[in-house]
Length: 578
Image 1: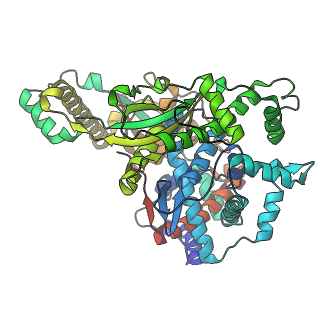
Image 2: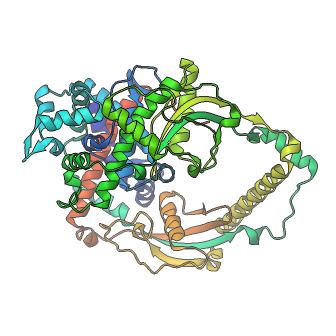
C-alpha cells in the first residue's frame, strides 16, 4: 500500500500536462503550493528539551491527561507539553499569549499526533528499535557524559532530579529513535523535468495591476437599516452570540522564581549539569542567565510539592466572596518568601506538608479572558471536559509565565448565561451596522471586479506594479533566480501588507480577484500577463536551489506516508475549545 502511494507521486507529476483545461502557465500557478517548505523538526531534539523539564511518567487511557487518540494509541498531555515547550524555546517565545499568536499550541498538537501516526506506520512496515540502538543513543547524549564518555551517575542524577524512572525515559527514547528512522527516508534526486518545472514555477513573474478599495469611500453615500425591528430580527438570528461568558473556578499556588534564594551548592550542580548552555566562567561570574534558569528550575520543583499540597488540602466548594477575580496575569497572588522556604524545606526533608503551611488561593476567571495565559484557558477547557468523565477535581499542567510559575487546579465551571435583548440592544445595533456595512462593501468590491473582467480597458485606472515574483512577497526565497525588486510601493499600504497581498495573488488561481486586507481595505488585482524564466536562467540555479527541490520531493514522499496513515487511522481530538 505504502509503496503504491509513493510511486503514485511520479505518475501524478509526469502526467500533469494532460490535466484537462490546464495550460502550462495555469498549472504552474495552481501548484505553487508545492514550493512552500514545511519545517521538519528532529524528534531527538525533544529529548534535550525535556532535560530541563520536571516530572514524567505514564498516563492511563481516558484519564485527564489524555488529549487525543490516534488509532489505538493515546496522546498524553506530557508528550504535547514537551513539543509545546520545545517550540517555544526554538522560536524564543517567552509566554503563552505570544505562543498563541504564532499558533505554537496547535503546531505542538499536530506534531504529537504526527508522531503517533509515525509509530503506527512503523509498525505497519516492520520498522523496529533494538535495545542496542537505545543504549547507543543514550550513551551519545552530551548531558550524560563526562569527558566525552557516558557516565551512569550523570544519567541517574538526571532521572532523580526529573522524577522519572529509567524504564520510562528509555521507552520514550526508543520512540524518538523510531520516529527518526521513519522520518529519515532517503533523499530522492529530482529528474531534469521535475527540476525545471519546480524552478520555473518558483520564478514566474506576473505583470500586475492593482486598485485599493476603501470601505469609508465606497460607503459614504450608502444608507443602512438599523431600525428597532431590524435590530431585534438580527438579535433573534444571532442570539447565541450574546451571553455572559462561562466562569472557571480554580485553586492555585503561584511562585515568583526571582524570589527564590540561591543555594551555592545546588547552583554549582545545576551549572555542571547544563554547562553546555553557558560560558565557562558563568558560575564564577554569577551569570544572570544561569541564575535565572536555576531559579526557574527550583520554582518548578517547588511547584510539584505545591501541587501535591493542593491535592491534599483543597476546598472543593470555596466561598465565592473569598475568591480572587483574575482580570489579567498580574492578578495572581504569589507566595511570600516564608511560604517559598516552607516548600523548599519540604523538598529537602521529603516530609509531607501539614494543612495551612502555605496559602491556597481560590479564583474566578472568565473563559473569554484574553488577558490571561492562553495555555491556562486551554487546560481549563480540557480539565472541564475530563471532569465530566471522572467527577473529580482536576489538577492541571503547571503554567510558566513571565517570572511566575502557576500551579492551577480546576474546581468547576459555571455555564454561560444568555443575555436578554434589552441588555444588549446597543451592542446588537453596532453589530448589525457592521454586518450591513461589511456585506455592502464586499458586494460593491465584487461589482467593481466584474466591471474590470468585462471591460479590460478599465485597467488604465489601476496602479501598475509591473512584473513581480514570489521574491517580492512574504514567501521570498533566497534561492530564487529572479531577485526581489525592493522598489514596489503602494501609497495606502504598508510594506508588509503589500508583500502579503502579493503572496496571496500568487496562491490564487484566478487572473483577476479580490484580496481582503482587513475590514477597511480590499485590494483588486488583475494579472495582465505572465513571464516564464528563460532556459538559460534555469541553468543559473544554485546548488542550494537544487538541494531545496530535492528536499521538496522527499517531503512529498513523507507526506504520502502521512496521507496513508491519516486515511487508515482515526484521530480523535479530546481538546475542547468552547
